[in-house]
Image 1 (spheres, one colour):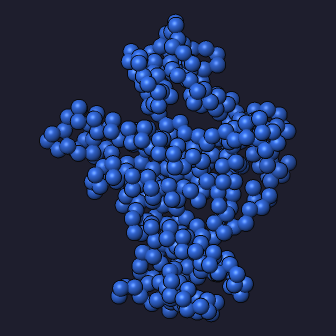
Image 2 (cartoon, rainbow, N blue to C red):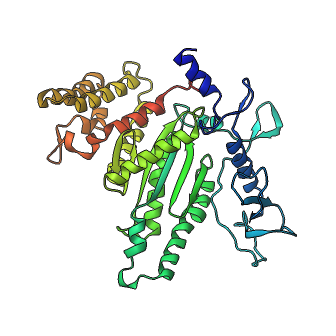
Image 3 (cartoon, one colour):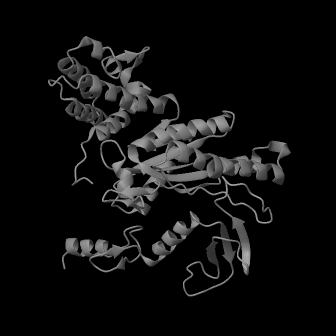
Amino acid sequence: MDHKRYSAFVKHRMCPVCGKEPAGGDAENRMPGENCEYFINLGKKLTKGKYVEIAEEYNDDSILGIYNVKIHEDMPAQRKEINLYRINLQEEKISDNSVPLLHYANNKPSVEKDENDDDTKKNVTFEDMAQKAKGIEALAVLKADVDNMGYMISAGFGERNSISRNAGFSRMLNWFFAVYLPGFLKNSFENVYTLFAGGDDLCLIGPWDQMTDLAKIIQEKFAEFTGKNPGITISAGIELFHPGSPVVKAVENAQKRLNESKDKGKDRVTLFGCTMKWGEEFNLQLDFKRQWEEFIIHTSNEGNISRNNMLYRFLNYRRNYDIEKDIIKKLRHRFMFIYDINRNIKDEKWRMREPFSSLSKTNIDGIPLEETLFFRNIQVGISIAILGQRTKTKKEG
């Protein structure tokens, strides 16, 4: 068996969820592996149960050593629990205070009606979620956590540092991620799936185009929650992936993007190879997407403008600018933006509007354009606009 055939064989026999353990099922019906299947079933029960019991009770089916996790619909009559918590009661009147309430984020897209049978409902898959995205059918992982947590716990309160203050601080952070955020997502981003959110971090999966906007909103909500304290910030990383690829790999890549945000100063977000500060630097790229969508809508009847091809050319100019070492040749790629805009956009009204107005200038407020925040990360705005204009195809899905 040659290398390519062997690699295909190995990939076919690995778990479609994690890509690491052997798959279940047979060759024609590849299913999740044993460990993934255990946690999938546990996750299904967590969304419906009322009590979670952590018991010191080993059995042959346990993959957690001497411990076993049980989910109950009602208060268990006989139990050997180490810990027992009430769950999924956040929106109900609570009369029994004998068992502590465990807040945890368990958002998942709601079930949908089957197109072939109005009376049948089906669980929303990653493929279904990807179809909700605008443009390319893809998902994105958003990972984020609070910066400098170790320092804030050890020295954040200075001489007033105490166990009780640290405990209160930790509980309030957990409340934002495990209580406030799930409620916000349920009302405003119903197609986003929560892999985890609590403590001081989160990991969310959803349609790729929604995740870029969601990252900005979460950072703004967190800043409001902390009273815009400049010493308490979050960093994030976003990684796109196709729904058929292993989720664990996409999460690992999102963690790498998050690490890049941390390494380059924190209080930042990283995607498409660029690390940007929250606020103006990131917002400029989201604005590019919005401005391009307006341009597409208002010039849709003008057949002489190859709009999407122009985006690809813009991206190519920017990449060549980075690759070129000679300063004169770098400027050549820089001025290609001006040439392309003047040649293809005849209406002066549009040339005076963003993003064309800034791209047609040699400097902004006395700063050479290539040194501005806008041009430095322009490949992010261009990439988002390109993917948002991609036509869905069966092959791509």
